[in-house]
Image (cartoon, rainbow, N blue to C red; front, side):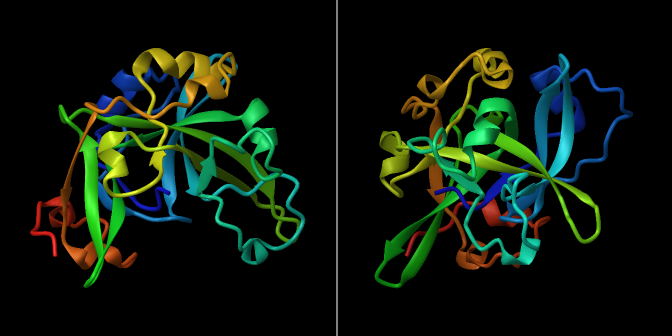
Length: 226
């Protein structure tokens, strides 16, 4: 699965890549090197023909959820492509609420004799990655507060990712943004990325902790694998 990722894109880069049409002043977007489930993440969605960047909780809460948020113990930060159309937690969002999740790279872990070894995956040419996602809105019945949340869709790995893990995020090209957001495309679009898209390297085991500082750029520096 994909349970941790990074985003060091600037506001200008995001506006240009996703052709945002929202009316908003430039945002201060500090780089983040340890984004974890339930953290707020920047998500691109399209409403009434306008693309906007919206902060959302990473871990989807479906609008029909009737219990307190703390009782939602299912792992909803990833949605498997094989069941995204049918699983109750995701099927409604798949039909109506598509999104794009900007990323600079993501981590996966390899089991070794001395413990879990993290590997950082990023684009071979240094460009941004865009994960296919879903979003939903949920209202807290106790407080009335509205919560926007999202999930990242994962699929079978390509050859590069398969050396470390049996899953990888669905990574979309710029030409695929419109059919995905509009709902014109279905699961047929959700394929493993080409083998030459990604590069990877081992990084410090400090990233094994979800409490590793999000502003620590050394988390993605190459390190010797154990």
